[in-house]
Amino acid sequence: MGNPRVPFRLGQVGHFGLAVRDPKQSAKWFVRVLGLRKEFEFEGGVAVGNESVTIALSKGKPSPNTLGHMSFHLRTLTTLRKALGHLKKHKVKVEDPGDEIGPESLGSPHMGIWFYDPDGYRWELSVQGGKTRRTPKTNKR
Image 1 (cartoon, rainbow, N blue to C red):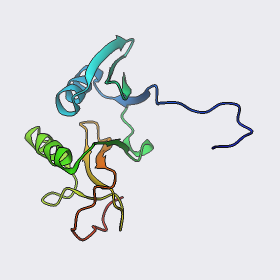
Image 2 (cartoon, helix red, strand yellow):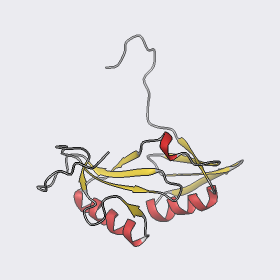
Image 3 (tube, one colour):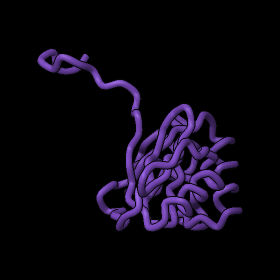
Image 4 (cartoon, rainbow, N blue to C red):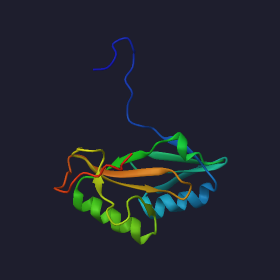
């Protein structure tokens, strides 16, 4: 599939970069809260990641509005619920307090949690096809 005029196909995400106030502090948050590991340091930053993704955290002015959000898939709703408990334990700002797990969009079969890192970037953890019997929320972005 894809455009036959393009002579290549994109593969897995190698890494992406975010400007953060304090790369070392942000790296600690990503390790503690999202279970990533410190991969390496570079001039003005720290890279954190796992076998699925690497995030390069560079010293700079955070710009959360330039990235709507980044989503990571989890395997089951049970894991998503455990993730929510973990986020709450670490006092992470989660959207929709009291009703945090909901459809990705109105009528979507995919369920997610949306939350923010200390620099204000918005993140999502979701289960594809993990719809529950609850009524879909309409306030998800």
